[in-house]
Image (cartoon, rainbow, N blue to C red; front, side, top):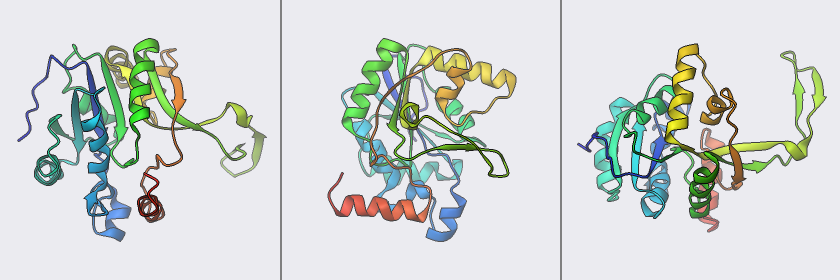
Length: 241
């Protein structure tokens, strides 16, 4: 079993959140989305590989469904020789709970933590490098792309309320990178108030801490539906990644 002990020599750790149950995809594809094979390799393995190969990352924490820990260790971590993986921990009920479980396995001596979705296989080296550099300077960096379409705000009955200014809108992806001390404080305050955000940055924003956005990519897709999986296969087939 991969050690769950805290590594006090780690400056930058990647926390890959792959604890989702993915029941809709599992029903249709016979496997949770993070473990579906792309060109013979699990989706999760693509995400891990970039952090394994990055000289900006010292350690990797994986958060996966509890019943998949043995599979992940044997079929992914060992099979692909991901030596930077220091812990594989069980996910929680919600994504935020899963990330919290991962954070609990990091020493307070860790400077930065990079949180990444395990179902985003096409992260780039440049995203990792820029995330680390900007987070060191600003405390928090998140990856995003400019909104390509017009976005309208509507009420729950789908009545349009207003058109938002597109030039100011970003579609946020992962990785999201933070000084560990800031992220832990944000998680603590969220837990006290029972707040659940849709991403880690939202927790910092509640404390008046606003991340810097760095450029992501339209290829940095999140695989959540069969259509996403088809797009991922096309990206690989045409050599776009």
